[in-house]
Length: 602
Image 1 (cartoon, rainbow, N blue to C red):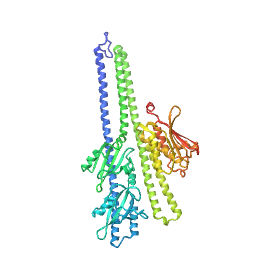
Image 2: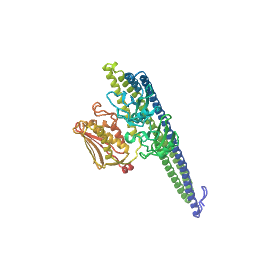
Image 3: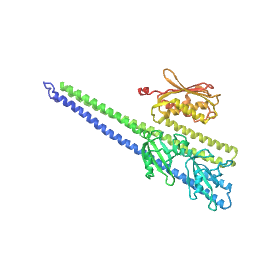
Image 4: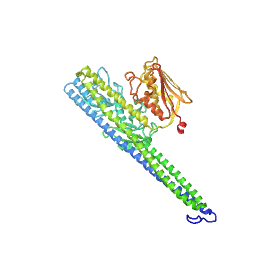
């Protein structure tokens, strides 16, 4: 037995039974308390994850519905324009023949009202393209096109929407939409057709906020790919692909016109939550997908915070148990002094608990404030960029239309002013897009894995050579230069550095670009070197500041944000980037990447 405070200590020693009971009770209490707290925390974390999942599903449903309405409205508007042309062509045929001037005027007016359409043309019964934009001087026959054959052989074919194909006049990937023209006797007299640009649809898709790894797809009635954004490969290889998840296939085959599901994509192995909708009056599906790891990023951060708090709670309870055990030990020997010590300990524990609660509250409050500030900053950035895009596009469109339609009514000075307005609006759009790229590079998550920088350099230089085949450059790329980092972000870094080298070495004879690595102060340094115009080192620090440049925009166009993006990406990988140059003697851009072990040690 152990005497209570206020009584004398017994002469005999403590009983072992009392010691064991006390220890087991403390252990049972600590285990039970922590188990209860962990179960409660796990339940809260699971509920939070379900909430994030539901938000993602709601977002994809809403985006799919919006995209469905936009596409359906655009297709209906195109059909109305085609019907107007059909009516006019049949009226002229009934009156004795086609009035080319009047029909071309109607086609031009209708085309100007359809931004998604790059061409609106009319053929005769043999398939010769005779009327419409960009027809003069061409001899194009569409008698072998699927939509022409169908319109020719089926008098009641109505509106025909064909699979995407490469247009013969514009050499762009388009979706042909056509209607049959009847002669006065009901015979086949040709077709009127419009070509909807896949590039225009891709720009519409890019305006939807689906994150860095989200996808938007448009599929036909047989689930074949019409358009995917972002595209994994070129249109020619992508169009018509029927690679689709079995879940989506079953939902579509069951007749459901809308649905939501979560699968791992067969294209890139990324898990996403998809929502799809079938257009009511047209044979297309729209599919919106958000990457699970992106929309759960906030949940993961919240979970880490919970785990930290749970770890602190476990440590605190273990410390409290240990203190209680030590107090019990001292009580067995000196009961009187222990009573005072227990009171002090109680006060200390209360103060510690109060301090811990205040600390937890501060951590939670600061975490919420930081997250809210980041979200508000990113939202404000995207909102500002979107608000700028709309008036800029309006200015660009109205000025371009005015320059096109009223050029003959304006003096030369007025025409030049309009061209300056169009050019300035486009440059401002590029600046806004550069700002968005800078925000994405700063806020995007990092997924570290083994990245082959040499392979990325080959991809970028192959693209640059294909875009400018007349330039015969000397390209030297060291092999097997690999690092630990995020593939997409490091691809952006390589694209920025090699694009700059390609641009600033354009006037060299011949231009030369080298990518290699060297050891500097016991650290691997990756280098991109060119023999271009170079720059004054007094301006070196400005190169990595957004929208700052060392050369005039008239000489080397661009929005001057690429190096700022590269600097932020390298900094997020624990490295640094700098430049060395002399005017007229080329430049070399150097950067380092902190390896995984060193990054963990930090």
